[in-house]
Image (cartoon, rainbow, N blue to C red; front, side, top):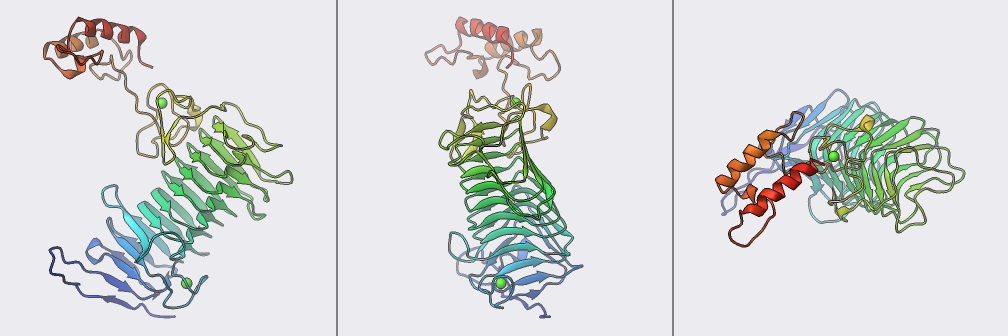
Length: 404
Ligand SMILES: [Ca+2]
Ligand SMILES: [Ca+2]
């Protein structure tokens, strides 16, 4: 086995303020180590392997830059660099300081291969991270893999190949490529996921798939099909989700397909395709078939009036949405990846105990009116004076209408 060839490249001093350092990783087996922001970026120029028993930990804010050619000419793809995990990988990003994996130079896909959680691995935990410019960003053959708030973009083939092991992916986004999650084995859960612009959001078409994959509160927008299944004896469950604007059937299975599909409490709206469900498939309870009113082709937030607001089944609610907003907001969870914040104007004192609206809100409104607080401009008038008697009747009407 090759020994690690790790060299601090020395500070690359520049005349400009903020001289930076980088760490070159030439490939081969890595020792157990913690990569810190002080050594970042880490530039990988050949396939690296985290051997069985070893753990590589990446601290918040670490950037990993991957070269465009594999200096070792090794692995699954001799021309592209792979990060091979036989031990364990821990990426400890934070919202403020995510961990980033991307090509050293260039934009687009297939500039490096991706991260492979290999057979025998105990797995990986990746939090607040971005993985870009790959063929397939993540391939997992074994172990337990937890993804939390991971953005996967600019990949050519698959965002994640689930070939074995157990997956728990929460608050992840998969943009473009052939599939977001390609299930060929293993099983697990995907929650609060956003899939956009791939031929299949979730693909399950492999004889070795015999387990269960459940997607809760996912939004599949502008995919060929949101869910596409075929061979295999496993099951794909879709709960409290949105499958919208699919070019093909929203949920597809060929006539001879064997994977079981269960779709409950989900908005399936294939306005641009041949239909919501391919022949032989049918929706389960709680499904609707209306325009979900997504904010934009790149934003899964729901616009006011969306039929998905408060329409999800409580049994499948998750505790927060793609953006970290706690669920439920208002009387129930919203279908899809994004929960609309609950705003109840007449709840002036922002109380949360039932009844939310009570006499305290009247005195609160009076106080705010007296202090000329902008809140008291209930009718949003712009002519002076903005606060007048109309705002009292406006408040009374909103109070009578209640929170909704
Ligand atoms: Ca390689
Ligand atoms: Ca709600």
